[in-house]
Length: 638
Image (cartoon, rainbow, N blue to C red; front, side, top):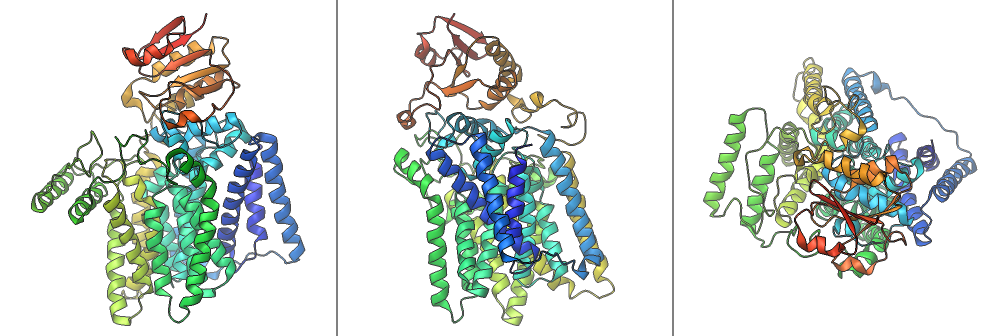
């Protein structure tokens, strides 16, 4: 299988990089080098329109051979030391639990296609169009998220899509990120002073996050960003301990990769890295400042190509402030202030508190309403609330977009309080400063972004970054327990976390592993519609795909102005006719300046949800024939 070249490259790079502190350090170094190679290969091949199977195979083979040559040149024997602590029953419980979770999520990822709504609207369509044009330049689209949002996760998806000839490995980008984040969390816990049990507990806290388990089997990019963020924190801690230029370089690279994955990294990363640097400043501030500046320059250098593309499109390196570029669905708050921030804090926290008890959920809802009444602010203030939505009671959702992490939130709160108390007693502030950083990141998130019902997924990187705090605090708290009872208390906590993770592992609302809708039972074609079943138009996509597949048309135009969920049609058509091409039609925004992905006029056009829309139908009057499939209108030539 050609995507194996990616695994070989990651393995070779991991073995080749000099290890500073064991296998986990080696893995994180290799991971960042792999990420930089992924970015460099994509951008270089894109510049000559060569993001195709053979060039990708050659590039990744070259990376693997260079890594192996570097390893051979060092003439250093490879060995992996098994720590005696692995026999510790608590560590065995954590390791076995983590192994079970990642194995089961790997099965889910393997047997389900990319099917979240965002994947249908922009994660996967951008991959399809990039593959067509053999590069990542911008293209015309009514939905600007497809071109202007941070692209690094989709770069890896693009490589797997081109190398494998389809989307069967797409979900593994997030799955690999979940495994890497677990390793990174345990490494950060070690750098913060946690011993073996604390490190294992931190890893388990990360592995059992309900929102993380659900995200790890899909095609979004939240876990992918969390992976780079925790790597940046790790190398920040390494640099402030060693002052080595290589650690500063890896810090900058990891930070740049995080910023190139998701824009929320701009809200989260500064607080985490500031906590790391401030806590260890002491008497070497000049070297620390120099290292921080060097890291920032490295990060900016990696992100420059995408910055330039966005600036040319919108006049901003981050692109437009809304998906359509018109400000109507603007992501940021319209007004700013402590009341607006407090409102968003309350609403976003309430989303994390959803439980099975309807009484509990209603109680949380009423508390937030009373708090807003005391603040004198509307709970659905249009200036801080996503258009066409309203605040409702939290839900015990089992969906990657809004799954609550209530028990993990409680654990992190207790951990923060425990570390704060310890810092006052022992006058050691490193751990509590780091614990405060995710809190500051959350406040910044609430201060800047409008509240909407499905923002819980965006907080996953903060929970991942907070997991090392739980591990460090667990050691502090358990030290006050009788040595005889300590293993039982610690083991109970681990088993509780594993039990809490079961619904997310087995009963994912979109990709369930058990039941009549299990990914092991339902066909991939049906699973494409699992997250958009409320639209009840799966049959429409299938009929439209069947109609187009029966025609001798090599290039299909798609108008997604009224409905952006285009990937199901692309996937179904590609199954029937693998070489069919797509272009966007009816584009009326700034992206019209870019050439189409392919130089071919469409011989048929599908206008999504255009039945009865005279304005859009008039755009295609040149076509002499049309077919109406429910609310889809297909234009074609005889």
